[in-house]
Image 1 (cartoon, rainbow, N blue to C red):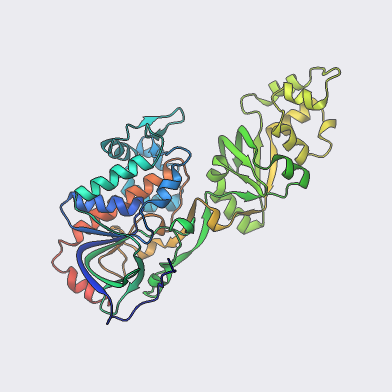
Image 2: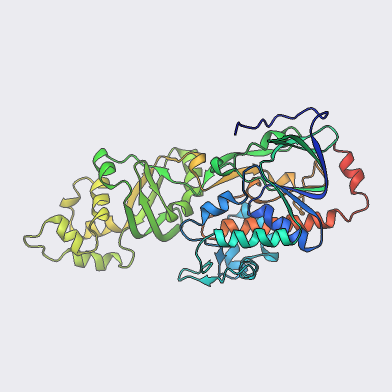
Length: 429
């Protein structure tokens, strides 16, 4: 199918539709807003640019869908930065980890808590949950319109969509924008909505990669041999934060769960100073003194590589020591133990935005009120990653999107009952 234009279209062409609430974006935030409204008996139309909804949601569950965490709400909120908590705390205290789990179970997910406190559906995949969700929304009367690309507003305030059958104009008592951020554009999060809001004077913070990998200047020998090799469980540190997790050596550098958890702080440090130095404890289950005693045992005729391997530092761990420490073989047992516990890696730059799992940036906090309504556009609410916050993967990102969708749905429900809402909306167009 040929690419669809997103330019505003003449009002003299196209079809029209009236609805109580128009939700633009069929990801987790938009679908949760739709469920919240439809459960209250309010007619809802969801407009999605892709052929099917939830594309990024499906992609997130390929390795096992981590829905949320088993943490209490205060512990859960502590995993977000201060800026994100300003956005998220009210929404998460209403619809937090426990509510997400109850919601998923009501769809037949049969969730369980993993050893790390992460919550997964029994099937471990997104597709069964998404199918059950879409069936529920259909039963609630939600109407889904796919291949509808939002083109902004007409002069009279109607929403304009480009569709395969020509332009469509939609009149709504309330609108919820849940258009996503700017990462993984092939799945629908393109950030192409930014000009439509910027034209209304709404401030949008620049997009930045979040939950992303980083470039490292590997030697050609190390890169060619170890690209694609998992780095077994280690403790990764940056600043005062230390994460016991895993990572992956790539041809360009590093990626994986631990790297994603540290990515926001490292990205901002690189912006400020030009690089970020991360530490890796290659032997997280042993303290430095214990490791030094093990390494000090005579190795006899064994090679240095065999000696490292016998002491839990073989394979890619040994290769990282050789890659980062000149003449590592000449170090004393004490120095070698210290090096293995405090290995440093210089990260040069974050990977491009279109490779990132999520994004930072978007509509700034000052542009929306406490109900997530745009101050400049009464009756228009925003939810999900299009707002300027970021969060780690591991259940934090998805739970926050669901919570914001629920909050926006509740706010839109309240809005459409206000007697003066029409006059307030008319003043904006």
